[in-house]
Structure formats: C-alpha cells, structure tokens
Amino acid sequence: MPDLLWTVADDARATVLLAHGAGAPMDSSFMTRIAEGLAARGITVARFEFAYMAKRRTTGKKAPPPKAEKLIPEFRAAIEAVAAAPERVGPIVVGGKSMGGRVATMTAGAPLPAAVVGVACLGYPFHGPGRPEEIRLAPLANGLLPTLVLQGERDEFGNRGEVEDLAVGPHTRFEWIEDGSHDFGPRGSSPATLKGNIAHACDTLAGFALGFAPPAA
Image (tube, rainbow, N blue to C red; front, side, top):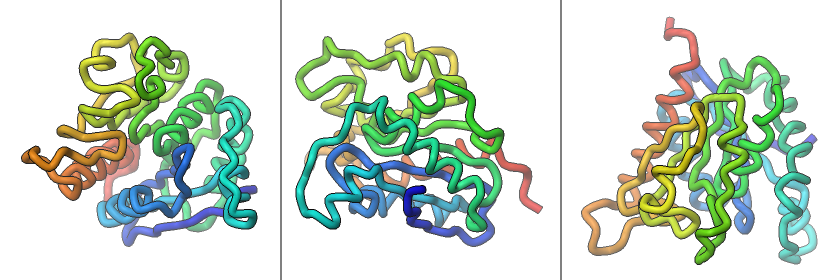
C-alpha cells in the first residue's frame, strides 16, 4: 500500500484522492496549494506517490515514470487504502495533476469501490507539448464515472482552442482556468492571478465533490 499524505478538513463531507504529475512529487507547491484550498472548503484530501516517484526520495535519481497503464494497480491500491482509512469522510473523488489525472481516468474505466463517485483532472495531458496530433481521449471517453477536467486556457498539453470541442464522452465536463498554463499560472499581462486561478479550481472541485455528499447536518 502506498503512503498517504493527509490534509484533513474540519467538518469534512467528502474526500479527494490525488496523484502527482510525471515530474513533481505529491508535496509540490501546486499539490499543496490545491490540498490546502480544498481542506478550507470542507474536503479532506489524501495524496500519494507512485513507486517510481517515492524511490526518488531515497535514491535522488530522477527516473522517468513507467507507462501510464502500468500505474493503474498502484492507483487502485491507493483507492483501497483511502476507502479503509479512518481519515476518509464521505464519498471519494479520485484524480490528480496531469499524468496523475490521466491514470485516475484510466483506473475509472473499470468498476471501483462504491465509495468512489467521480474523477477530477488538474490539467489533463491531452497530448505532449507541441504534439497536438497525439490526442489521448480514450480514458475520458471510456470512463464510467462523472469526470471534471480543470484545464488552463493556455495549457501546453491541450489548450482551449485545441480540446474544448473534442468528443470527451458523456461523463466529462470542462472548467476553464483563465489564461492558465499547465500549472494554472496566467501571464503577467493577464487580469487573472495564480492565487485567483487556484481558488477557482478549488471552488469548482470542492463543489463537484460535495455534490455527491449527503447534506450537512
């Protein structure tokens, strides 16, 4: 079972499980801002690392990730760990940053424990940078659960002009992050700010997760 990093919310009503992107760990600045923002909105967050990333902490060597499909068993193990954990509250939304979100969608292409109710992608990698012809739609189109894609309008892995009209399937909806990059950061000339974009992402994801939760007492 993977080690879990918990950010526990007061009066939580739902739980979000997040995996990291291909090149940064579960406690990166981006992941921490999202976890803390969700906790402030009544969502308990569990983060975990795939084995290749966890190994970096002990070896210091930056080995590339395995192919995404090989990470599905690790994601399923994390889901099982969260579902059984005392910190977990209410329904579970699974997801992650970039590659982590892609693996979450792939994992949700098969039945999951009943507690898992949705998927959230923080910057879905529709294609590699500069390779818009390599669109990765199958995980979204074949998913069995409601899926929220939070995507920067300028995301180099799939910007708004490239992907908003794609056939992503009946379960997937987009929420666009104003002038956002892959990490949701806007340009300096933009009226948007990184702080505001992170808040928008957290508001939207919290609302998505709480939509599956029972009403507050």
